[in-house]
Length: 190
Image 1 (tube, one colour):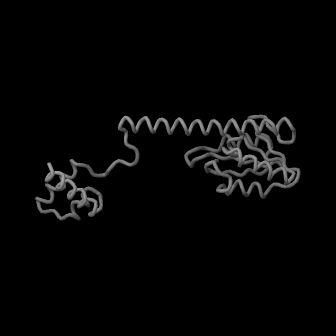
Image 2: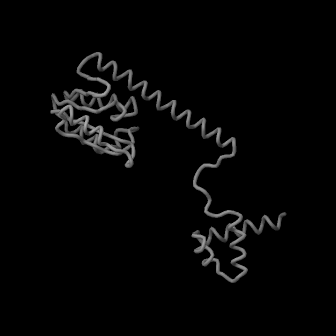
Image 3: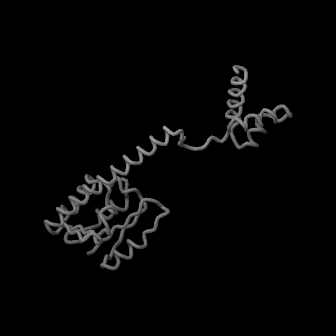
């Protein structure tokens, strides 16, 4: 039996092209999921596919990175399939573990894929470090700032309660009071 596995990393991505490619080569059962490919054990559908296959079945993915982005995990997956007498094939890369050349190519390509993932992570880290040096701030934007604190103090002077002001700015009362207190301390120190 031909068994397929299709994966994308996030719910916003589409599995249709992978499913069509797997159906085109005759996969009778296709497991799909929207989950990161970094670790095999957090992917329920992959585990179900590995449990489902039997001796002489063929396990298909469209590309190696659809199965795993980790060299270690890919080899564990292939070892699991080999132990069950199941061949592994990546259709778009013309890879097949039933041949020595196919096993060699899968090993080489998985190492190259892991190398590319590491390079991408290094470039991202370098970019973040460079941006931080230029003063770019990461993380969520503060809901409250100095201008809003001044507005809140004015509203307090007009008789609004701290809770009414916090509701107006859609922040917690304690957050509002902390900003007002910090602002007043800075004004006193100046």
